[in-house]
Length: 100
Image (cartoon, rainbow, N blue to C red; front, side):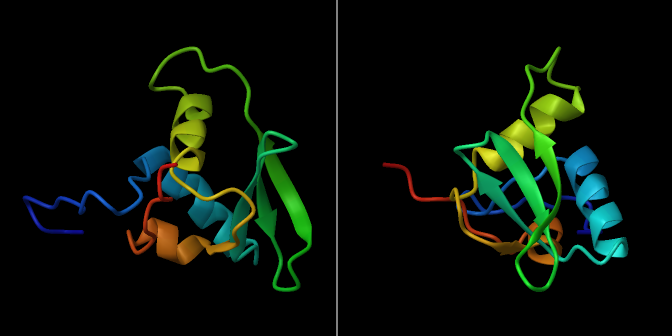
């Protein structure tokens, strides 16, 4: 990611920097996994055992620079209910969900 002309592939999740920083803070708190809970309209941070430790509710964003918008933008690219390693999202290794 340190390359001058770094671009991610079209099929890879595009995670905004602010969202990456938030994910990293949860990794530092030993929450290594996350998933989108579509029914509850939130992103959940998970412990190793898969239990939800914290969550982020999707509220209406004020603008595109708002963390609300950026977290929703990230979540919209992920498959609901699927558990992801936060480190894989941060390092651009997660493929986007297949559109239906």
